[in-house]
Image 1 (cartoon, rainbow, N blue to C red):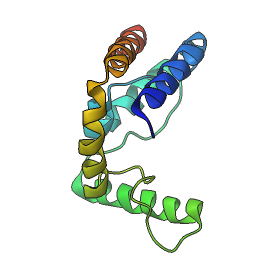
Image 2 (image 1 turned 180 degrees about the horizontal axis):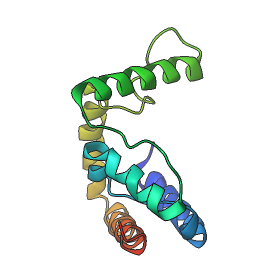
Image 3 (image 1 turned 180 degrees about the vertical axis):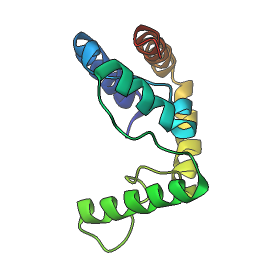
Length: 129
């Protein structure tokens, strides 16, 4: 996927959903992957729900990864995990990211990346997370 195309898609998505901001939570990626329980607590407080907060233990992390792998295999209707589509860290994805990083030297990509980062920061700030 071309990086300029991907950044334009990211920007378009967030500009489109901004009008629905009161109906969802935006949290920093680092918060989601390291303290998801707090994201759930914030969700419960904001929407009056009673979801059970995720306890960030090694056992729960491994169970979550196993569930993600199972869902990916069922979604792709394959008997194996698809490393490029599965929603968990993998060596293959790290390798792909390293190769794509050079595309950020494109002047248009630099401008779009700056805009995407500003949109992300704004959404997080407006969600008061």
